[in-house]
Image 1: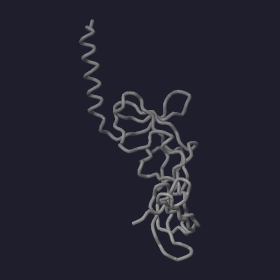
Image 2: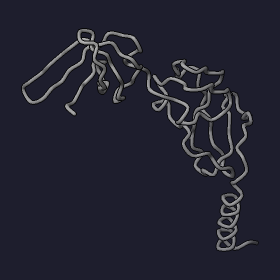
Image 3: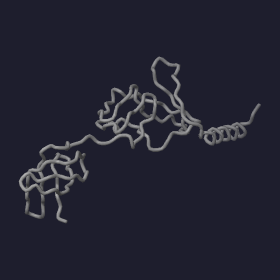
Image 4: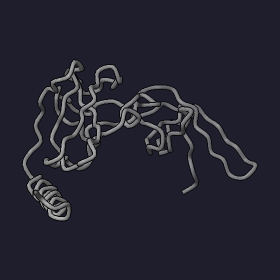
Length: 175
């Protein structure tokens, strides 16, 4: 009969060996239960969940949670850094490159949707204290909220840069 102290030490040793051997690349396998949840090996003993596409997502395509499949990570393998793990990270984002089914989604492969399209008429605001100056301009670049883009004033033809705001307007600051 094995003593409880020896069993505990043996379990700790097995866990350490599983974590150390976790440098092998991840792979997917179908689970045996009725759900079609894919399980991928990882160094996370808790069974962390990440999302993978269940079909190809092409560059410029909006990512919908309906095309994502949850993946349960198994102990023993290592998960790459900077991959999307939650639906909130992906909802409403746009693919920068082709995302293949069954593969992790790198955070660098997604971007926010454009609020301002190239060539669109935009409202530009300069605000300094109580002074507000507005003008109409044409965007020379697409941009998401927080992006610095170039615009051309429709009246004067001057080109300047401004920051895209959450409502799709452009904020210009004094330089």
